[in-house]
Length: 68
Image (cartoon, rainbow, N blue to C red; front, side, top):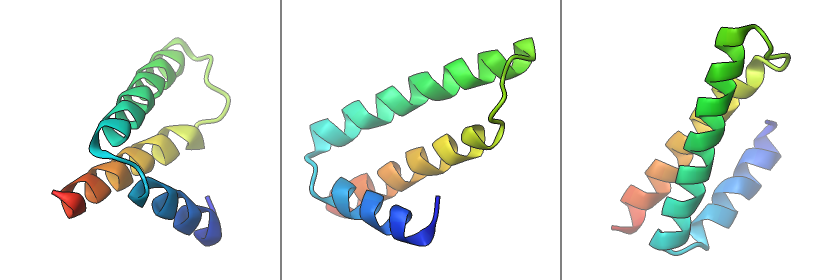
């Protein structure tokens, strides 16, 4: 993700409620699980997506802690 995309993503996250943030986090965790499974099976083509999803989860957790 480029800096502008990251800033837009974080701005979008800050506009969400705690429940919506938790839902988004769960969706990304499921995607991360699926990506790890694909990587273990040798079927993952976009390996950079693993790190991107991890960072998005971390950004969501940061926004969640900011609003508590």
